Amino acid sequence: MATVESITSGGVPMDLYLAMPDGTGPFPAVVLAHHRGGIDDFTKDRADRLAAAGFIGAVPDLFHRMPADTENPIPLLNDKHIIEDMAATVDHLKGRSECNGNLAIGGHCMGGRVAYLGASVNPAFQAVVAYYSGNMFKIWGEGEKTAFELLPGIKGEVIGFYGNDDQNPSPDDVNKIDAELTRLGIEHDFHRYDGAGHAFQNFMSDAQYREEAEKDSWAKTLDFLKRVLA
Image (tube, rainbow, N blue to C red):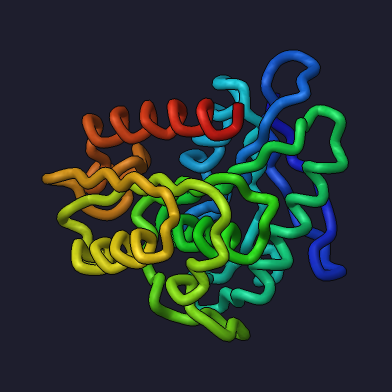
């Protein structure tokens, strides 16, 4: 069952899409950072699928400080606020009896970057699932370091999924992230797909969706989460 709850982040109300597994739990949880489409049908579908697999799927509205009619919210994002939003979501989950305290963070597109960022600054996250995480080498708003520069803070395992036809992140960008995680001794497993570009999981985009890559990456995601959050 999925509901939308209102919590507070940095003193500001924030919607949280919460997909709960059947039963009483307690369950592990995955904080899912949405893509530039916000909490749309694709993101809700991923959270609902997580719940069907036995995980609480929690999606904070990272655009909640912006006017609802903002056409391009990406330039208005602020790493300081994103970190606050992730912390508020973690606190909310840890305060629920249905959550057993085992937490991962994941996301698609900008959400993949947010997944790295969140895990780098918040030790509550035991694992990262990053889908085509663009803009890893840029600071958003009041951040002091890029998501790439903050990677040493990650405490858990990482799994990443990338299309070889993508340009943000490009294959060279993915190589840099891969090499840095290796240098840092952070256990990680990257999967790359030929014939796939950005947003290959997004069934809402006929031009970008790649069924084979979507199914393979999602199966690997669930296997990973079941292992690291057991």
